[in-house]
Length: 495
Ligand SMILES: Nc1ncnc2c1ncn2[C@@H]1O[C@H](COP(=O)(O)OP(=O)(O)OP(=O)(O)O)[C@@H](O)[C@H]1O
Ligand SMILES: [Mg+2]
Image 1 (tube, rainbow, N blue to C red):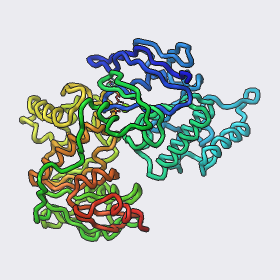
Image 2 (cartoon, rainbow, N blue to C red):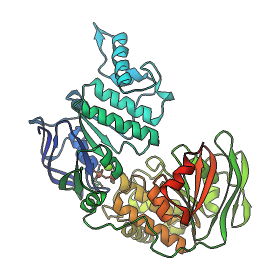
Image 3 (cartoon, helix red, strand yellow):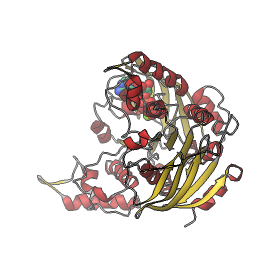
Image 4 (tube, helix red, strand yellow):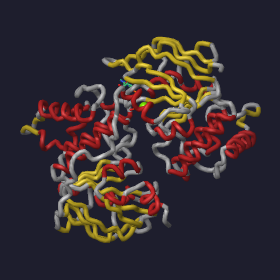
């Protein structure tokens, strides 16, 4: 089969860090090629090189046998190499069509040929099965729809290669299915697809081959057909990761109620939310994306208002109107959207982890640097953070490693009741296991955990009890013995 892209001895160095180390492999024309590896393995860096976002590197990239070295992403897109980002940057003041054609609008003489432009962009949207039009404003669209605009943009430029970097992490289940369908269609139209994900089931749905990076080094390329998840995982982590979403320690839920919710309501969002979580217990909230689980948690934490109901902590009524008040009551919430709600840009890992617990690290009006580092070292080991350096800027970490820092920041607060919203989103298989161990240690130490998760294996493996929500209501409750994908989905799809 013909080669589309060849990476030859690609090495990329950052100060004090080698992100890619002599990477050598090729992508075939017209295939869907998955790029896999743990957090910090170098996946995003490799795509950034392909797309001209990094133009300084060692080695050679060839596309259809000619050497390229794009200076920026526009040069790449003019060459037909397009990317779909997880963070969408669209101009909200412009229409859908203007965004798709931005900078490359068809002209009639000196003027933009708007009619021609909208005709062309509408035809692309139709091809993608989008329900919105070129003349619509961006403001009204969902994340999934905005992603479609990026794909439309790639088609507008007649892309021959489209790369996706963790495209499904912010999509609803329906949108995920649609995206995977579209990728299969792109492939049948001869477009070559590069696809980064931490969700291995997606690999089996769409990819022909998968290449694996580990610590910046190329490990292997595998034909997806006929192999198992375990083979992929073992190559990614270089060791056996035995069944990791399981409880290794005895269950330890007590009868002591840590937090109780009574009839919580937020008009038009959720209602009749009543539950108890006990010390030593992991209580999960399952449901489809859109079940409003995050909304309930944010309201309990005081990040969003509530229109009715009562929260009790250790048996006492509390009135929590702000996250600060929640923290004062021993409650922490580790948010789902950690990219935007998380760390200070030019702070080091040690500083970011200490950020929410400064009272503990204060020494008079000074800060106890030694203790801050010690705390950071502990979580570096616990969570397998890369690079394992407390003085490294969190901003320069790979996406998944930055998420680990934010989780560590909240664990550092040492609160009694911790709400984890999608604790392992964007986190690789090896580090997931570390996070599960931390959760187990926490409940063994008498803390209470509320987990919101869309990953059924982790809900089933880790929970003492599961509440299922659908469209803002609690629709079912399952004990540990009753947990299965079927039993949870049965409730989640109701209504
Ligand atoms: N701008 C930068 N400055 C310094 N180091 C960087 C920079 N960008 C990436 N790195 C480092 O390069 C390595 C590879 O990062 P990269 O983002 O490519 O990983 P990744 O495989 O995409 O991981 P993830 O799954 O977490 O997104 C990491 O160790 C990261 O810390
Ligand atoms: Mg990445």
